[in-house]
Length: 330
Image (cartoon, rainbow, N blue to C red):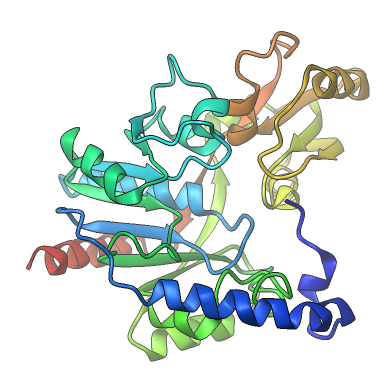
Protein backbone atom coordinates (compact mmCIF):
# COMPACT_ATOMS: atom_id res chain seq x y z
CA UNK A 1 0.00 0.00 0.00
CA UNK A 2 1.01 3.64 -0.45
CA UNK A 3 1.09 5.61 2.77
CA UNK A 4 -1.56 8.38 2.89
CA UNK A 5 -0.02 11.84 3.11
CA UNK A 6 -2.06 12.78 6.17
CA UNK A 7 -0.21 10.09 8.16
CA UNK A 8 2.77 12.44 8.07
CA UNK A 9 0.90 15.43 9.49
CA UNK A 10 0.42 16.12 13.18
CA UNK A 11 -2.80 18.03 12.50
CA UNK A 12 -5.12 16.64 9.86
CA UNK A 13 -8.88 16.57 9.44
CA UNK A 14 -8.75 13.06 7.96
CA UNK A 15 -6.76 11.83 10.94
CA UNK A 16 -9.30 13.30 13.35
CA UNK A 17 -12.18 11.74 11.40
CA UNK A 18 -10.48 8.34 11.58
CA UNK A 19 -9.69 8.67 15.31
CA UNK A 20 -12.72 6.67 16.62
CA UNK A 21 -11.89 3.69 14.40
CA UNK A 22 -8.22 4.02 15.35
CA UNK A 23 -9.14 3.92 19.04
CA UNK A 24 -10.99 0.61 18.57
CA UNK A 25 -8.21 -0.86 16.41
CA UNK A 26 -5.59 0.27 18.90
CA UNK A 27 -7.43 -1.24 21.86
CA UNK A 28 -7.75 -4.60 20.09
CA UNK A 29 -4.08 -4.53 19.04
CA UNK A 30 -2.90 -3.66 22.54
CA UNK A 31 -5.01 -6.46 24.02
CA UNK A 32 -3.57 -8.99 21.56
CA UNK A 33 0.01 -7.91 22.23
CA UNK A 34 -0.49 -8.46 25.97
CA UNK A 35 -1.22 -12.18 25.53
CA UNK A 36 1.37 -14.75 26.53
CA UNK A 37 2.88 -16.55 23.56
CA UNK A 38 3.91 -20.16 23.18
CA UNK A 39 7.53 -21.23 23.52
CA UNK A 40 9.36 -22.10 20.31
CA UNK A 41 11.76 -24.42 22.12
CA UNK A 42 14.70 -22.32 20.88
CA UNK A 43 15.51 -18.60 21.27
CA UNK A 44 13.34 -16.30 19.19
CA UNK A 45 14.64 -12.98 17.86
CA UNK A 46 11.91 -10.83 16.31
CA UNK A 47 12.72 -8.08 13.81
CA UNK A 48 9.74 -5.78 13.46
CA UNK A 49 8.60 -2.19 13.30
CA UNK A 50 6.03 -0.01 14.98
CA UNK A 51 4.19 1.00 11.83
CA UNK A 52 2.90 -0.34 8.54
CA UNK A 53 5.09 -0.03 5.46
CA UNK A 54 8.80 -0.44 4.89
CA UNK A 55 11.51 0.46 7.36
CA UNK A 56 14.39 -1.89 6.58
CA UNK A 57 13.29 -5.12 8.26
CA UNK A 58 14.55 -7.44 5.53
CA UNK A 59 18.18 -6.22 5.51
CA UNK A 60 18.10 -6.29 9.32
CA UNK A 61 16.85 -9.90 9.31
CA UNK A 62 19.74 -10.85 7.04
CA UNK A 63 22.28 -8.86 9.08
CA UNK A 64 21.08 -10.45 12.33
CA UNK A 65 21.21 -13.89 10.74
CA UNK A 66 24.82 -13.26 9.67
CA UNK A 67 25.72 -12.20 13.22
CA UNK A 68 24.13 -15.36 14.62
CA UNK A 69 26.11 -17.49 12.19
CA UNK A 70 29.37 -15.92 13.42
CA UNK A 71 28.33 -16.98 16.92
CA UNK A 72 28.06 -20.59 15.77
CA UNK A 73 24.26 -20.60 15.55
CA UNK A 74 22.02 -22.04 12.87
CA UNK A 75 19.36 -19.36 12.36
CA UNK A 76 16.20 -20.06 10.39
CA UNK A 77 13.94 -17.20 9.33
CA UNK A 78 10.22 -17.46 10.06
CA UNK A 79 7.93 -15.35 7.90
CA UNK A 80 4.20 -15.06 7.40
CA UNK A 81 4.84 -15.00 3.66
CA UNK A 82 2.93 -11.83 2.89
CA UNK A 83 1.68 -11.85 -0.68
CA UNK A 84 2.09 -15.60 -1.11
CA UNK A 85 -0.72 -18.13 -1.54
CA UNK A 86 0.77 -20.90 0.64
CA UNK A 87 -0.39 -20.91 4.25
CA UNK A 88 2.43 -23.28 5.27
CA UNK A 89 4.27 -24.29 7.21
CA UNK A 90 6.67 -24.87 4.33
CA UNK A 91 10.37 -24.35 3.78
CA UNK A 92 10.99 -21.98 0.91
CA UNK A 93 12.74 -23.55 -2.07
CA UNK A 94 13.79 -21.02 -4.71
CA UNK A 95 14.03 -23.81 -7.28
CA UNK A 96 10.34 -24.65 -7.08
CA UNK A 97 8.59 -21.74 -5.36
CA UNK A 98 7.68 -18.36 -6.80
CA UNK A 99 6.88 -15.06 -5.10
CA UNK A 100 3.22 -15.86 -5.76
CA UNK A 101 3.68 -19.00 -3.64
CA UNK A 102 5.63 -17.69 -0.67
CA UNK A 103 5.97 -13.90 -1.01
CA UNK A 104 8.81 -11.83 -2.42
CA UNK A 105 10.81 -11.30 0.78
CA UNK A 106 10.97 -14.99 1.82
CA UNK A 107 11.91 -15.99 -1.73
CA UNK A 108 14.69 -13.40 -1.83
CA UNK A 109 16.06 -14.32 1.61
CA UNK A 110 16.00 -18.04 0.87
CA UNK A 111 18.99 -17.50 -1.43
CA UNK A 112 21.08 -16.82 1.69
CA UNK A 113 19.41 -18.55 4.63
CA UNK A 114 16.74 -21.20 5.34
CA UNK A 115 13.28 -19.61 5.43
CA UNK A 116 10.02 -21.05 6.73
CA UNK A 117 6.71 -19.53 5.62
CA UNK A 118 3.77 -20.10 7.92
CA UNK A 119 0.62 -18.16 8.79
CA UNK A 120 0.62 -20.16 12.04
CA UNK A 121 3.79 -18.91 13.75
CA UNK A 122 3.85 -21.76 16.30
CA UNK A 123 3.66 -24.42 13.59
CA UNK A 124 6.28 -22.52 11.61
CA UNK A 125 8.66 -22.48 14.57
CA UNK A 126 8.21 -26.24 15.00
CA UNK A 127 9.17 -26.80 11.35
CA UNK A 128 12.16 -24.47 11.78
CA UNK A 129 13.36 -26.59 14.70
CA UNK A 130 12.87 -29.77 12.69
CA UNK A 131 15.20 -28.49 9.94
CA UNK A 132 17.92 -27.67 12.46
CA UNK A 133 17.24 -24.16 13.73
CA UNK A 134 19.11 -23.27 16.90
CA UNK A 135 17.54 -19.79 16.74
CA UNK A 136 14.36 -18.58 15.06
CA UNK A 137 14.55 -15.13 13.47
CA UNK A 138 11.04 -13.75 13.01
CA UNK A 139 10.65 -11.50 9.99
CA UNK A 140 7.90 -9.19 11.28
CA UNK A 141 5.31 -10.44 13.76
CA UNK A 142 6.22 -8.04 16.59
CA UNK A 143 2.54 -7.34 17.22
CA UNK A 144 1.57 -11.01 16.82
CA UNK A 145 1.28 -12.70 20.25
CA UNK A 146 1.36 -16.36 19.20
CA UNK A 147 5.10 -16.94 19.79
CA UNK A 148 7.03 -15.73 22.81
CA UNK A 149 9.90 -13.46 21.75
CA UNK A 150 13.15 -13.55 23.68
CA UNK A 151 14.42 -10.38 22.00
CA UNK A 152 12.56 -7.82 19.89
CA UNK A 153 14.58 -5.56 17.62
CA UNK A 154 12.59 -2.71 16.10
CA UNK A 155 13.70 -1.07 12.86
CA UNK A 156 12.89 2.58 12.19
CA UNK A 157 13.81 5.05 9.49
CA UNK A 158 15.68 8.09 10.81
CA UNK A 159 13.92 10.41 8.37
CA UNK A 160 10.36 9.07 8.44
CA UNK A 161 10.04 8.03 12.07
CA UNK A 162 6.47 7.16 13.04
CA UNK A 163 4.66 9.91 11.16
CA UNK A 164 1.90 11.52 13.19
CA UNK A 165 2.22 8.87 15.90
CA UNK A 166 -1.38 7.68 15.61
CA UNK A 167 -2.78 4.20 15.13
CA UNK A 168 -4.17 2.90 11.83
CA UNK A 169 -6.28 4.26 10.12
CA UNK A 170 -5.60 7.68 11.70
CA UNK A 171 -1.85 7.15 11.34
CA UNK A 172 0.74 4.50 10.53
CA UNK A 173 1.11 2.76 13.91
CA UNK A 174 0.08 -0.90 14.16
CA UNK A 175 -0.70 -0.56 17.87
CA UNK A 176 -0.50 2.18 20.53
CA UNK A 177 3.10 3.32 20.86
CA UNK A 178 3.39 2.94 24.65
CA UNK A 179 2.68 -0.79 24.55
CA UNK A 180 5.08 -1.29 21.67
CA UNK A 181 7.87 0.65 23.37
CA UNK A 182 7.44 -1.43 26.53
CA UNK A 183 8.21 -4.59 24.52
CA UNK A 184 11.20 -3.14 22.65
CA UNK A 185 14.58 -4.58 23.59
CA UNK A 186 16.52 -2.79 20.87
CA UNK A 187 15.90 -0.01 18.37
CA UNK A 188 17.71 -0.02 15.02
CA UNK A 189 17.77 3.50 13.54
CA UNK A 190 18.51 3.40 9.81
CA UNK A 191 19.84 6.40 7.93
CA UNK A 192 20.48 10.02 8.86
CA UNK A 193 17.84 12.24 10.41
CA UNK A 194 16.26 13.14 13.75
CA UNK A 195 12.74 11.70 13.38
CA UNK A 196 13.63 8.79 15.70
CA UNK A 197 15.63 10.78 18.30
CA UNK A 198 12.82 10.90 20.85
CA UNK A 199 12.02 7.21 20.43
CA UNK A 200 15.69 6.29 20.84
CA UNK A 201 15.82 8.27 24.08
CA UNK A 202 12.75 6.47 25.43
CA UNK A 203 14.17 3.04 24.55
CA UNK A 204 17.46 3.89 26.30
CA UNK A 205 15.58 5.23 29.33
CA UNK A 206 13.82 1.90 29.81
CA UNK A 207 17.10 -0.01 29.53
CA UNK A 208 16.96 -0.96 25.86
CA UNK A 209 19.79 -0.73 23.35
CA UNK A 210 19.92 1.64 20.37
CA UNK A 211 21.98 1.02 17.24
CA UNK A 212 22.55 3.19 14.20
CA UNK A 213 23.00 1.77 10.73
CA UNK A 214 22.96 2.83 7.12
CA UNK A 215 21.98 1.03 3.96
CA UNK A 216 24.96 0.31 1.72
CA UNK A 217 24.95 -1.31 -1.71
CA UNK A 218 27.06 -4.40 -2.20
CA UNK A 219 30.16 -3.27 -4.14
CA UNK A 220 29.80 -5.76 -7.01
CA UNK A 221 26.17 -4.77 -7.48
CA UNK A 222 26.99 -1.07 -7.49
CA UNK A 223 29.98 -1.47 -9.82
CA UNK A 224 27.77 -3.19 -12.39
CA UNK A 225 25.74 0.03 -12.66
CA UNK A 226 28.73 2.25 -13.40
CA UNK A 227 28.65 3.87 -16.82
CA UNK A 228 24.91 3.32 -17.32
CA UNK A 229 22.07 5.83 -17.27
CA UNK A 230 19.24 4.24 -15.33
CA UNK A 231 15.51 3.95 -15.09
CA UNK A 232 15.00 2.82 -11.50
CA UNK A 233 11.69 1.25 -10.47
CA UNK A 234 10.41 -0.23 -7.24
CA UNK A 235 7.28 -1.63 -5.64
CA UNK A 236 8.40 -1.58 -1.99
CA UNK A 237 7.36 0.21 1.19
CA UNK A 238 9.75 3.14 0.72
CA UNK A 239 10.77 3.40 -2.95
CA UNK A 240 12.26 6.87 -2.50
CA UNK A 241 14.91 5.42 -0.20
CA UNK A 242 15.90 3.00 -2.96
CA UNK A 243 16.26 5.87 -5.44
CA UNK A 244 18.21 7.93 -2.88
CA UNK A 245 20.56 5.01 -2.20
CA UNK A 246 21.33 4.79 -5.90
CA UNK A 247 21.97 8.51 -6.26
CA UNK A 248 23.93 8.83 -3.02
CA UNK A 249 26.31 6.19 -4.33
CA UNK A 250 26.94 7.89 -7.65
CA UNK A 251 24.46 6.05 -9.88
CA UNK A 252 23.09 8.07 -12.81
CA UNK A 253 19.33 7.82 -12.25
CA UNK A 254 17.58 9.52 -15.16
CA UNK A 255 14.03 8.30 -14.50
CA UNK A 256 12.08 6.61 -11.72
CA UNK A 257 8.84 4.62 -11.57
CA UNK A 258 6.96 3.78 -8.36
CA UNK A 259 4.60 0.82 -7.95
CA UNK A 260 2.55 -0.18 -4.88
CA UNK A 261 4.28 -2.18 -2.15
CA UNK A 262 4.51 -5.91 -3.06
CA UNK A 263 3.13 -5.07 -6.52
CA UNK A 264 2.48 -8.11 -8.72
CA UNK A 265 4.03 -7.11 -12.03
CA UNK A 266 2.19 -7.93 -15.24
CA UNK A 267 3.66 -8.36 -18.74
CA UNK A 268 2.06 -5.00 -19.54
CA UNK A 269 3.94 -3.37 -16.65
CA UNK A 270 7.23 -4.70 -17.96
CA UNK A 271 6.45 -3.70 -21.52
CA UNK A 272 5.71 -0.18 -20.29
CA UNK A 273 8.99 -0.04 -18.36
CA UNK A 274 10.98 -1.21 -21.36
CA UNK A 275 9.26 1.40 -23.53
CA UNK A 276 9.84 4.18 -20.96
CA UNK A 277 13.50 3.22 -20.62
CA UNK A 278 14.24 4.12 -24.28
CA UNK A 279 17.95 3.41 -24.09
CA UNK A 280 18.24 3.55 -20.29
CA UNK A 281 19.23 0.54 -18.22
CA UNK A 282 16.46 -0.83 -15.97
CA UNK A 283 17.39 -1.35 -12.30
CA UNK A 284 15.25 -2.51 -9.40
CA UNK A 285 15.40 -3.95 -5.88
CA UNK A 286 16.04 -7.55 -4.91
CA UNK A 287 12.45 -7.85 -3.68
CA UNK A 288 11.03 -6.63 -6.98
CA UNK A 289 13.38 -8.91 -8.90
CA UNK A 290 12.02 -11.86 -6.92
CA UNK A 291 8.50 -11.04 -8.14
CA UNK A 292 9.72 -10.77 -11.72
CA UNK A 293 11.24 -14.26 -11.81
CA UNK A 294 9.77 -16.38 -14.58
CA UNK A 295 8.08 -13.52 -16.43
CA UNK A 296 8.57 -14.00 -20.18
CA UNK A 297 9.28 -10.42 -21.26
CA UNK A 298 11.79 -9.39 -18.57
CA UNK A 299 14.87 -8.05 -20.41
CA UNK A 300 18.10 -9.94 -19.86
CA UNK A 301 19.90 -6.72 -18.99
CA UNK A 302 17.60 -5.92 -16.04
CA UNK A 303 19.91 -5.04 -13.14
CA UNK A 304 19.36 -5.47 -9.41
CA UNK A 305 20.85 -3.43 -6.58
CA UNK A 306 21.81 -5.71 -3.69
CA UNK A 307 22.06 -3.94 -0.34
CA UNK A 308 23.14 -4.58 3.23
CA UNK A 309 23.38 -2.74 6.55
CA UNK A 310 26.51 -1.11 7.94
CA UNK A 311 26.45 -0.53 11.72
CA UNK A 312 28.35 2.12 13.63
CA UNK A 313 29.14 -0.26 16.51
CA UNK A 314 29.01 -3.69 14.96
CA UNK A 315 31.14 -5.33 17.68
CA UNK A 316 28.81 -4.02 20.39
CA UNK A 317 25.79 -5.31 18.48
CA UNK A 318 27.39 -8.75 18.22
CA UNK A 319 27.98 -8.75 21.99
CA UNK A 320 24.37 -7.70 22.58
CA UNK A 321 23.09 -10.59 20.45
CA UNK A 322 25.39 -13.02 22.26
CA UNK A 323 24.21 -11.80 25.67
CA UNK A 324 20.55 -12.08 24.66
CA UNK A 325 21.13 -15.63 23.48
CA UNK A 326 22.69 -16.55 26.81
CA UNK A 327 19.79 -14.94 28.68
CA UNK A 328 17.22 -16.82 26.58
CA UNK A 329 18.92 -20.12 27.39
CA UNK A 330 19.52 -19.44 31.07
